Length: 228
Image 1: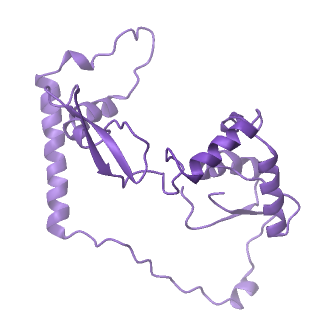
Image 2: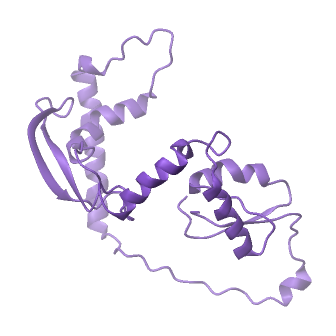
Image 3: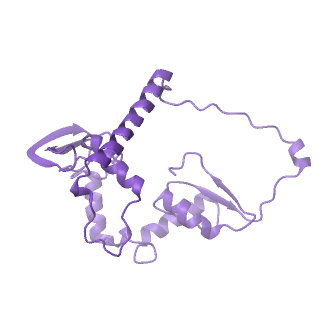
């Protein structure tokens, strides 16, 4: 469970008498792991961004390539709004080669990238046939679940044979098995409540499920370090 949420029905604001007996909470200083940029760095970054935007608008007006036109879209709304289309084509495209590299390995502690080149300033790419092994610092595989071998892979294979692959679906459509029920029983026992519901994703918990439980007068206490 990515986040722990507690719901209190019929919550009321504390009265003035209760506030008098309370001590004001101390402000906790949050220490970031990075240093703030200097004024010159921030200024140059903003100036460079606006120059890039200006060059993008100039390129769009003078040299609109045919590749950006949507085909077979008669009667349908555009896939992107005007600014999103402009930004992805004329701003992000210039630095696109720095990201979105296709990989040809599992995202473990190392990842193998497929080398590519562009001959039209990032509009299209061609594979060179060579590969580059890199250290993986940008993956959700921090627990090693995506490794091709090892205890995680072996446990995943055995669980597929035992429980099938329907757990990738929703809980209402074959996505619940005895492991979910056991987890929820243990969670309820640990919290000392009647029952508990677990969700496999913090965003789904916050965006989809909280509105189901809430009504006017409810208080939601959510932990500070939740992912979203």
